[in-house]
Amino acid sequence: MASSTAPRPPSSAVDAATLAASIQKQTDQRELHCSVMALAVKLGLVVLGCVSIVRLSGAYQERLDRHSEIDAVVTVETAKLQSLQQRFDRLFSIGGEKRLLGEQDQWIAPNRVRIIWR
Image (cartoon, rainbow, N blue to C red; front, top):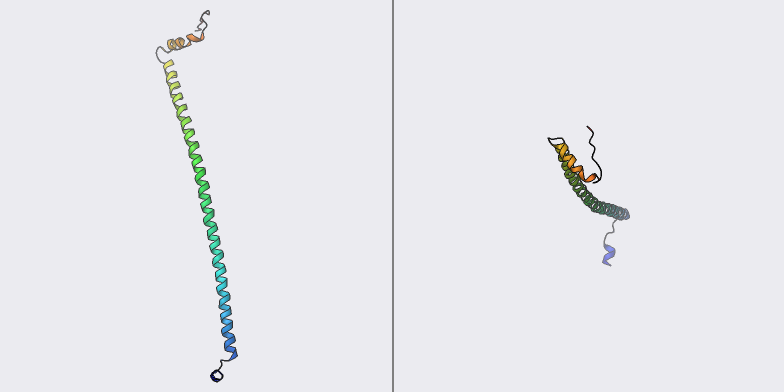
């Protein structure tokens, strides 16, 4: 019967403590939910960033391949242009007319007479 002699706290103190504990528990649960949602959003952004980087790296590699193809074509065409410019310059130098006529010989049929207009 020793328990009957112990003083009991007033019922309003128990109710306030219980109410404070329940409010604290609800606050903790809200904070946990917010933290979980924030973590999910951050993970989503990280995954989105990783996927974007992978796709961008593929597109960048494709662009580099195209650039190298175009560079090779430009190099070939530049070499052709330089050879044609040199040939053009030779035609307008001293003796260029004779060289031009010498190059044109294969275009004239053997049984034809060449006519040169002056």
